[in-house]
Amino acid sequence: MAKPLEYNATLVERVDVTDALTLFRVQPDQPPTERPWFVPGQYCVLGANNAEKPELGSVRRSMSIASAPEDDGPTEFYVRFVSKPESENPLTHLLWKLKSGDRMYMRPVAAGVFTIKDTIGLDDKRIRVMVAAGTGSAPFVSMLRSELRRNPSADLSKWVLLHGASYPGDLGYRDELMKYVEVHGLKYWGTVSRPQAAPDWKGDTGRVEAFFEGARLDDLEMRLGLPKGGFNPKNVVIYICGLTGTITGTIVPLFDRAFIPDFKRIREALGVPAEAKDSVFYEQYDTEPVINIKDPAVVEPLKARMQAALGRLESGQ
Image 1 (cartoon, rainbow, N blue to C red):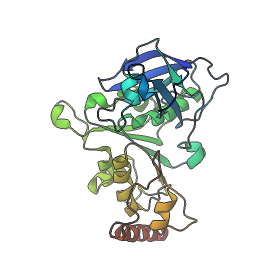
Image 2: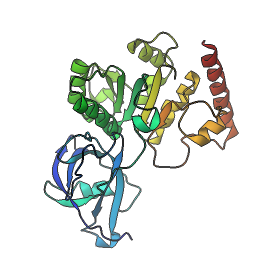
Image 3: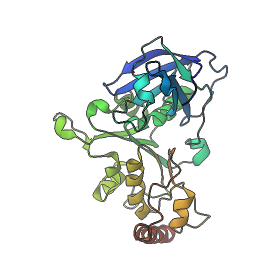
Image 4: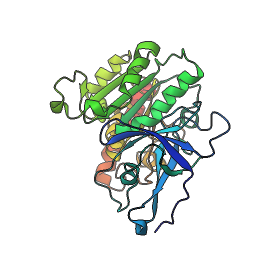
């Protein structure tokens, strides 16, 4: 049993987007004295003690930051309630009992390398396609907000956010993102996987990873103004934040476009040359590969596809 946490922060505001999606704005007792204090794309650890069942102790989980590092005031987190938890002491079940003014734990140090700085570098000119499922939009919202905090007239036309959710109401931050589209040139498309429950929805349908399947990828390529076959690592870099299914469903079709995941064991299994640069980055707390690299029946066809794509890319086809 984890020992009780010493609370060091206050939930100053919560905004319930839906019954199962909430923005938590948390103020540490000793806020950072310098701004920016983290890099967009990083996460913090939130925690709580189980007051109703103290025998279960405390629980902590890493949560991506949605606010911009330049912002004063509380730190924002976009959290989904886990209805079928694997743990007997799930953090979200404790968080959902909190109201504004309640105490909690927040580690006042950010961590993680799922950032532009730590992946491709700030000066990279390629289109940045951000693939988010559910609350996976949080680190990307932080990135976009940071761009605009540092330059209120920033051009976001090289930024693309693809956001998937079950229903239109689950597309958190949509109003804010649509303003970025109108004013700053952001390319943003939300997609819903259960459109039958939303007959008025006029946008894309299906899971977010479906944007990369067959004719859908050709369509996305056209939306981005790229020539046929131009959706490749020479012009585009991919960032993914979501569950394993979203990550796998995105990277596997992109093997045919020579996109290389930032995961050493997958690179090696697919025979990617050591000098080839990564072009797909994803946030994953599990250390296991998102594809079964131990099964030759899985790996060999993927390896052949990757090798063929690398050859086409090298020859300019």
